Length: 209
Ligand SMILES: N[C@@H](CCC(=O)N[C@@H](CS)C(=O)NCC(=O)O)C(=O)O
Image (cartoon, rainbow, N blue to C red; front, side):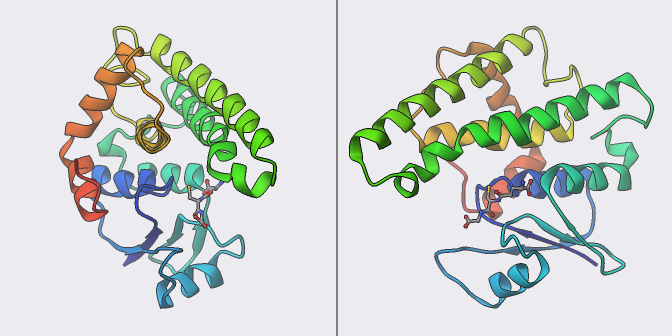
């Protein structure tokens, strides 16, 4: 059986959501850097970068990186429509949003998470955080504009890009960044939140409101 190593509320939750949306059989293994255990040691053995997600395929092969794992999951279950067929515009559009989520959007939060490690100067930390909050807000505004009249980021279907965007947007709550001004994004977050697969994942990761 496939194994998915993930961490609660982290980017790897997008793969956890993907697994549930696709209805695949897998063993979910939660790791926590604050409580190191044998599962964390195993993840660090499998992925020298020491980060989640890590997927171990049915054949025992190891795959890292959210975007690759999400594409792999989607292609294992084409009937779930998490990604359109290869060679279609719909597919590359989803890949474009997935890339935005993994690079621009995810990474815009890193200075907020790591400001303390970047400098010992309290004033510089505040400057870094101010810059990062503006960067995150620019990305939220970009999403908001692109959600006008749509249920999901590429239109009517929930895709793997939505799984990643939902998880990263959720970090705003932890960072005290209000998303109220982004009406389309707020409605979208509620819509994704209500999905049964998402509810199942949030419950198992201890994240239900
Ligand atoms: N580019 C990587 C990013 C993975 C990553 O940064 N994972 C973070 C959580 S979002 C992690 O596991 N961090 C380990 C830690 O918290 O120490 C991917 O797409 O898989």
